[in-house]
Image 1 (tube, rainbow, N blue to C red):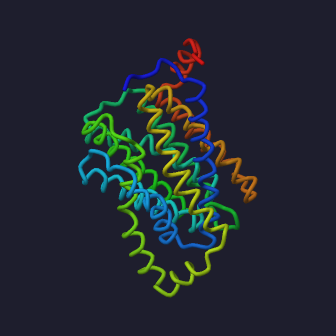
Image 2 (image 1 turned 120 degrees about the horizontal axis):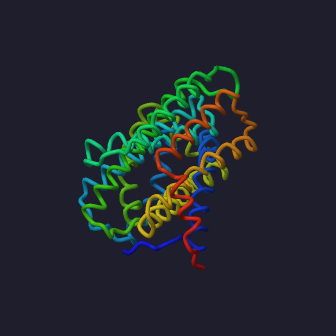
Image 3 (image 1 turned 135 degrees about the horizontal axis):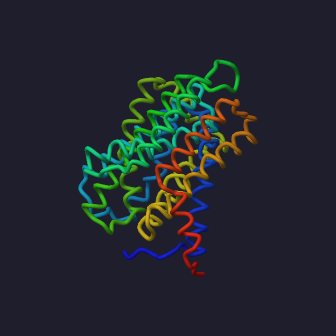
Length: 309
């Protein structure tokens, strides 16, 4: 697939749609965890994403090991840890910031696994972001509405698993450059269902699991469907297709807006107000991302490029 020279208005709208969905995603997770345990929420999310679509969506021409690796890393690893972090005291707003460190974990993993060499500016961005994370971690507390240290560590671990799934995607692109991203997401969503269900039974017990399922209200159902259909199937498919159509440097900057939406949504829905230290740490993480991606120069070049309707 050839890369477009610039984002069309339609692709710009798709990118902003992904930003909005992923930014609201953290608030919806918090709401879902009010009625469901982390492991049961994960099982229901990926069951709704995979079933019954696998009966109608063709499996992409990729090895089963890549589908399984992505499903377990992105599903069980990323969202299992993130759900636990949100339940154990991570605020929705700060989670939207910390999860963006997946870009730096991807950088660290890409060197030994993919043989990709990082530029000096990328290492500088990593150092700036790490300093921001240290500031955020030091600003934890145990009061109502405050971010806990265990919640922060679990969310940071979730970002690492997101980076691991990014590496799997790179291997998938090498194996089949033109694979269908929607089919990839649908079929890989099969693999987290059983592990999530087993963990739910082991950690919650069969009686509690049945009680939660029997007590599902409209709010919990809507949360599961939003996470499955919008945050998983729609957003990840749109994002992958944008990366197929445009250079990564033109698409990646949009991810910087996810914490903006996440922080604003958490403030409106839960009254979350980051501390001054957390604002400083957030600014450092976002600055590190800008440096890492070389976005200043690329953005200037993008703005100067002729736009097509």
